[in-house]
Length: 574
Image 1: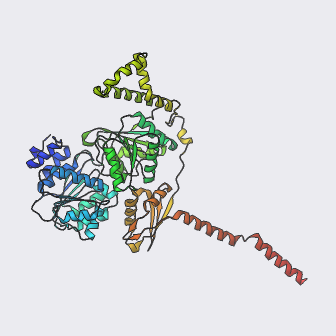
Image 2: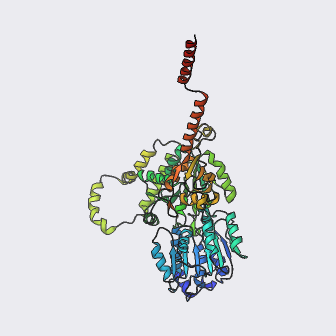
Image 3: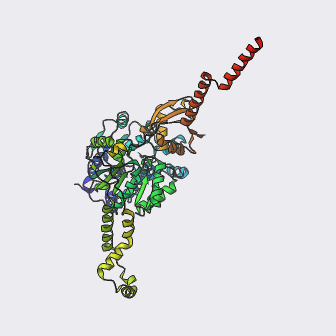
């Protein structure tokens, strides 16, 4: 494998890279850098997250930038503010000894005025999220009409998040003679459309198998009843005492609820989702990076762009709706060539989805039984013994207490002392798991058939935006995906009217989270109102039904009055 010096990179970059601890190139770096540093080709790079893609494009950009230029030379688009900041910081680190190269990170959730002032002072490379960049373009605070290089990082993620129109708007404003570089983990059809429209004879490089998961990730799945899902999560965590994991949930509401349950049950956990402010998100991520948290419970949108080393496990509390999302979730572990484990907690109706993911990724998933109480206690005991062996003894601090300690423990022999020390912490696990039930579904007895999961109902949503606001079905779907963080599979029929629309959901489990996501939302300065239309529709149907029934079967009082009048006439006639 080549070194950075062998690629002919300028000495200042090599020195900074070595100080960061990078000696050998990763496969994507070794193959991409020689192509990109010439600056004369469009490029498509397909590789899993954690394979060193930032250096693969960041180093060539630092080589190509004209430090004497008074205009922006390169634009990097990223799906999330976390990834935007990470890329900007990484390139600044590469350019440690090239101080003339100026870089600006442009993203939502931070002061736009500060970002504008930095751009005004002159920058060579802008790293941006599509939404904030389009905002700056509309305000005429940034000019991208003369850039030489555009890079789309995590392009498949950006499209999943509904940024297709934003990306089109941005790329249309860039010069035709620019070079476009695209990096992604998967290659959905939408990316093919972008490459055909904005690229000319691109060099395509694939590391590993296209659309496949990283080879060094082991995929396990546990099958439990729905009511046992959270208990299974805790038992899996307890069975892996040294776990450092990201737990993925599908909605913000579920993410918050699971994190709160874990904290209440004594786990070092916290949540990461779209309802947190930037300051809150930064605080959570700081705790997680410093390993003060053992479990980070996150939505897919919030976790995009997270680059944390040594994540041991990715846990799918719920399977995602799209296979590409599963691939991206898995990519949070096994970074930089390390190994990792992806765990999925499923019920019986999800087994078919596991088979489809297996086939798509060409990876064998291992069915694993949820450990019983004895197995959990055994793992915890062994972990405790290892910690005791590794503990550093503060000789100076403890020496003055040794006399008193020895005197206090002189009547206890060695074996008894060991048992008592271990029991101090271990007893709580023994007590908790003494009568722990078997969470695994017994397929031989077909109890998975007897205990069917409750079926979810569909739902409908009203929104006060429609065709007069520039929405069609596709734009409305992307808008909902961006605001809620849900995938397109969560939505069914979309009915666009003039000044309002109706959006049907495949399941009412998303309803409350969607309504919460839109609280305080503005669209072009106008307050967005989103209501549960299914309740109103049911009320209208019930009301109409009552009216129809009243016409068919008038109340008995009417019949009696009518009869009385009829009898009265007969009496008068007689």
